[in-house]
Amino acid sequence: DQQVKQNSPSLSVQEGRISILNCDYTNSMFDYFLWYKKYPAEGPTFLISISSIKDKNEDGRFTVFLNKSAKHLSLHIVPSQPGDSAVYFCAAKAIGFQKLVFGTGTRLLVSP
Amino acid sequence: ETGVTQTPRHLVMGMTNKKSLKCEQHLGHNAMYWYKQSAKKPLELMFVYSLEERVENNSVPSRFSPECPNSSHLFLHLHTLQPEDSALYLCASSQDLDTGGDEKLFFGSGTQLSVL
Image (cartoon, rainbow over all chains, first blue to last red; front, top):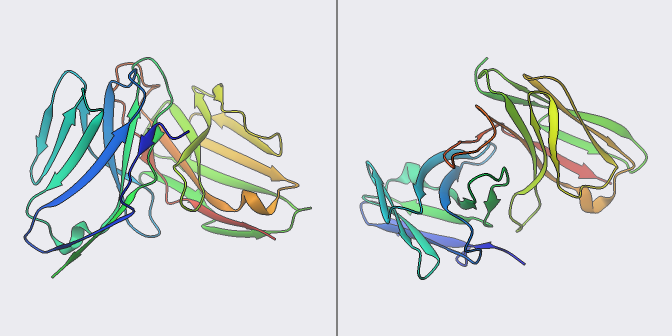
């Protein structure tokens, strides 16, 4: 049973537009959420995170929104650039536990 | 060298072979991890080491045997694997074990393993 779900395996967006990647979770014990980005032939790299005490965290073009009541988070990329084309993984964890639970990833393609 | 380095990048082995995956981190981190990524499945945590001590073994079959001789090196010894073990094996490190929630993982590029 997947505790972190990314229901869209892929997303295509035009350069300059907004990319919205979604993630749902089922475990109410999760209180920290992260997004990782993965290019082909490379390992995932940390992108942005959010604590459950916040509902928004922004870092440049990347913003993560958390809706705890809906157990839903989203990553917004504005404006999208071709270099953003990658697989994006949502991950969640509970404080005090080592285990980071990942989703299956969403492949983003940003076309010029 | 910087970051987390994994060798080999690709490995093809038969079910009766014995091989080892190697991971080295140059970040001065105290915790290291092995993850498995199978096609269309989430990354699965296999093992966690903190200061060379194993702190988590996520119900991994004994045909996978980890070794952490020091805080910079991590190995995954493989023997009598099955074709369903074919996957991308990722090593990661973090400064310490996550206690506060914001401990970030730094991943290597992975070893793509094929078991014939």
